[in-house]
Image 1 (spheres, one colour):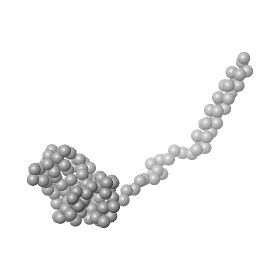
Image 2 (cartoon, helix red, strand yellow):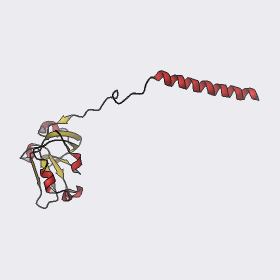
Image 3 (cartoon, one colour):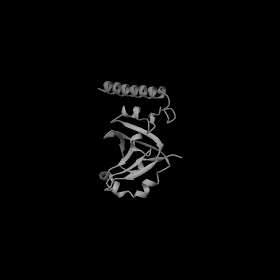
Image 4 (tube, helix red, strand yellow):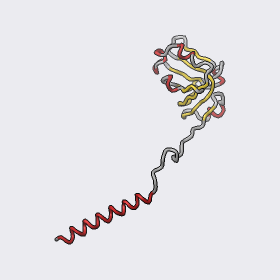
Length: 142
């Protein structure tokens, strides 16, 4: 009866030793520097031809804010990369996403600043827009 128990223990010991050897031979664990970084394409907000092909998908925009405003009711606020919103993508904050809770002067603070923002691209009556839910989604660049 002792022989099968000793054989089982010996077999388990050999298996554990084999696993240890395989782990040592595998090499060091990859550090952050060796892991490839996923790079997103950054679009100019005025590149409407390329952006129209990306409707309904996530895009990253980088550009300078030229204008801000809100609807007559105040339920929708927006930031534009050009004076005419048809010439570029508009960043839109709808009332249901908290636009009423964001002071207008905070929107005006973005005018003249270069920003980086990502979100889903939408078409609204022929004009491109990106719906945002918080000002924290916008990163101001130096």
